Amino acid sequence: MSAISSQASSIILFGPPGAGKGTQAVRISQTTGKPQISTGDMLREAVRAGTDLGNEAKGYMDRGLLVPDSIIIGLISERLKRSDASGGVLFDGFPRTIAQAEELSSIAEVSMVIMIQVPDEDIVERIVGRRMDPETGDIYHIKFRPAPSEILPRLIQRKDDNEETVRSRLNAYHQQTKPLSDWYHKLSEKTNLRVISVDGRGSIDEVAESINLELEVF
Ligand code: ADP
Ligand code: ADP
Image 1: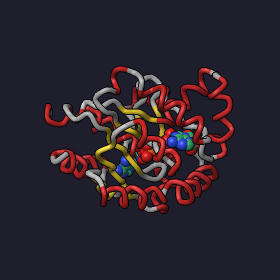
Image 2 (image 1 turned 90 degrees about the horizontal axis):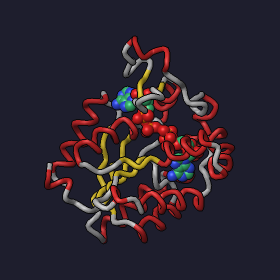
Image 3 (image 1 turned 30 degrees about the horizontal axis):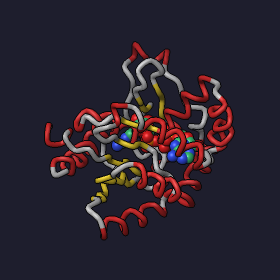
Image 4 (image 1 turned 180 degrees about the vertical axis):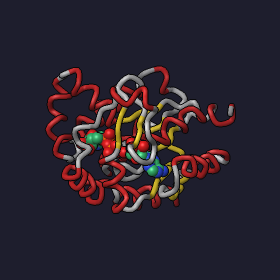
């Protein structure tokens, strides 16, 4: 995998909430050696720690709205200064607006955007059944990826993983994030950027396999 990890440029994982970005990010990170940068995880950490940034972000997250661009761009700029980011990173859940993508293009080189396509009607079941292991960060699903019985008692459900909030998160996705798909496709016509679409409706292993095939030519 040295050919892959020697690339200094970054990869973006793009898709609606619940598409499987976090699930696939762990595997892509192992394959490419690029650290996963999840703005959702960073924001939840700030909320848990009770920082000013976390307190400001919390109201938006609980309502299923996007956190303002200025907060997100500040988080990302700081994160990219860390030494592990020097060989390129894997962005998970960022950028989510055109303003964020424009800002990103001035601070990092992106060579690939992986779009995981999942229709809205599958999203609610995925999100409402999602469970997290707070000790390892592992992502499970009550039906699609059941956790081993010994860790069941410690699993948690995210506060925003309820049916009502999913509707507003999907709305935010269609209004503010989905236009980025065209934006990146247009950019790929005039640069070396590769934009690939992956059918996210198969099993977790099938989706991983489709992504791996694309990474082999990365
Ligand atoms: P995202 O990071 O895009 O919000 P996650 O990776 O957290 O998505 O996945 C959302 C939920 O759907 C989780 O409970 C996960 O276990 C489950 N999941 C992920 N990929 C698939 C898949 N291909 N098929 C069925 N369920 C999946
Ligand atoms: P999901 O797994 O549903 O894709 P995330 O964990 O990525 O959700 O994000 C959870 C919440 O954090 C979002 O609903 C939003 O409020 C906030 N958030 C995460 N990333 C961003 C971002 N790049 N821009 C704005 N808000 C964000």
